[in-house]
Length: 359
Image 1: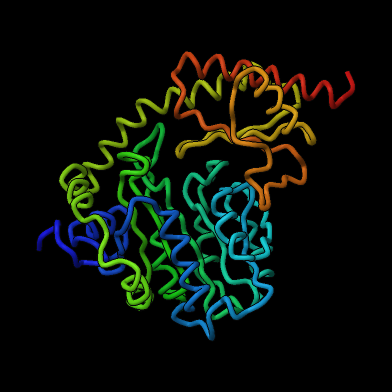
Image 2 (image 1 turned 30 degrees about the vertical axis):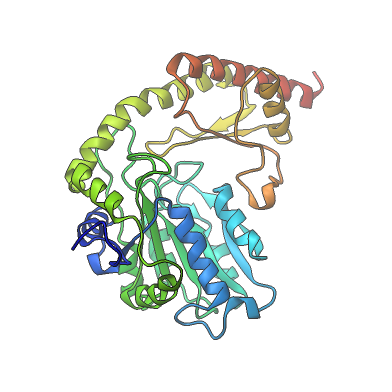
């Protein structure tokens, strides 16, 4: 086939194979298209809204009072996607093992609950890895909605900072084994492997789901950029070579994450004004400041010239009920800049805590 020509809507076979090997699923379950996994997520929900999914009784636009489960702290762009379609966002507390499954299993008894966001490995922003028990319970769920979407954003599937590759479960196989073959939709991209905005994105799901969505996607586009897919295949080659590239990334990112951890320990350790995680992978560090001080901390940082993700962004509707969660993204600054920024951050957090305590 000619990568320069139209056709092959679901992607070049070599690109499908590359992503299948990385995700641990089968090649025929993979759709490769565009450069951003978020766009694919949005498009799947848009298709459900306008046309309905494989097991939908009607398009979602014909239903009222729809809800979506949002583990929080979580990814603000996930929340905004479903919010833009009018869904009620239902907060699910996160634990070190993943989402609170008792809360999830209770919520899905409502047929108005149509889906759930998940970042199962090095979750955004806490860096948690879902436990095997949580993953098994998710795969075995029996939602009241027949067209429930288990959205599985595996954005950091090969993004280790300090260790060799940590294997993860094939959620598509587990759902199939549990009788839920059509429930899960998995996503990934090379945005943090090659270039943001110029990479390749994919989604993986049951063959039946893929066939249904291809009919709908085929109306809006003849095919995606296959020359870019071919470029990535020639450069990344296979899973082994891609993991070797990620080790080079880790040589750059690992020291930055260590700086964040060291500066937090030096500046805030033992004071009782903040807790934080030391993730083994992903792209973020999550700090929980004293209740009622996150916005003030970031306002002080901004006054000192340091721009960070807004307080509350990691919760549905941008509202953190405790005003405590802060997401740190250390990947962009130079090491020297990051050291200085973290020192200022710690000072600002302590100032906000002192103000809160009236001292």
